[in-house]
Length: 246
Length: 246
Image 1 (tube, rainbow over the protein chains, first blue to last red):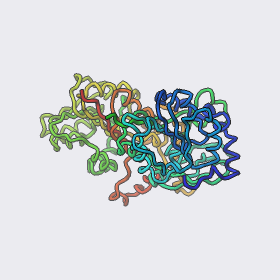
Image 2 (cartoon, rainbow over the protein chains, first blue to last red):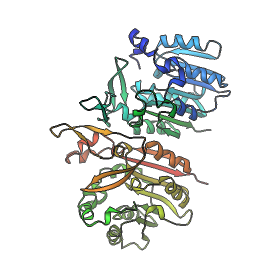
Image 3 (spheres, one colour):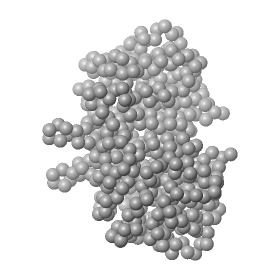
Image 4 (spheres, each protein chain N blue to C red):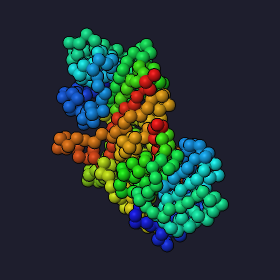
């Protein structure tokens, strides 16, 4: 995430028009699933990695969190986030790459990351760092683009000559690393990892897996153009895991 | 697995010529990975679901297992298995669908199933049954065809007009259920399930996930025709999980 497209004017203008930017959590297709897996925030210290507009920090505070620390590399996103959560003194933002965070060990009860880890080149050191800043018994919950979605790179359907979707292409699955996809008209670098790597990295760091869910589009969004096609491929993956209590 | 192609003459003749039938475990591309995840068999009671030719029962006995119970719906496969393991009195075979097993609770230390669960229509009752016949602290380890591989149904690559592989197609991912694939020239019924269903079914039954691995073709098999293409899609999934000790 060190190259940061979110501070590019054109990209930022388009991103800020997306349903998830305008409507917030309710505008995100995966929110219903993510919400159902969230731990109780009451009295808890949250670390939000790739916090963007601060929607999850605000949600945590509204649900009784003691504090929220939002980390994002985009200062433009953080300006919006700051404004959104200004009524809470206990919300703080840090403008840096999430790989570069340095908090004391056992500072947080919950670490959350929404659709940001696929921008990170070196996953394992990040997960080890998160493990260390979580208290014993703490929760890490994250969503990423699904390995099926990131494997081939283009992130586009495969079409017939009339422009009708035939299927979604998977390729180069076991070749992990950099992919270039076009998102909102801008070329953007993401990192493909296999499911094996995502899950075994958290297991190796010491976490216990509690849930692994590929969110489906919710019934009430099925009328949005293109949404029904999302039943044909998994686009996202949500992982919830726990640091052992002492 | 109640319709059983393995007792069909033509299919059986072809299956018995496959590398994994002739060479046994060493002929199976996923064996190296599966083997590395196997628990210690010494003194243990093994249940092998979909045991086929009995290769895994034999392996367990060679590695000090106390006993092995092999379950398969194909009596022709079991005849071969019986012959292969006749030197061990403590190996017993049961000719039935694995969904229909009835062993006393806590009869086994290890339940293993190699590439058979994708023939089972109702996964959750099977997993609950396995949980009950395992002793506390027991291990379930299974391989299945990967949800990416079973989703669209044909299980074939997508080719260009000159017959060159373009990619592997994923479709209808969230529509679980029956698929018809052609395997060894015969039409065969399999059941597609999402990764979410595989993993959350074992979690819901009470298991703790220990490993989730998508086996890659081993380096020493890369010269086998077609094997290098297996780096382009995940074909199998191995899951290892533990029943809580009391």
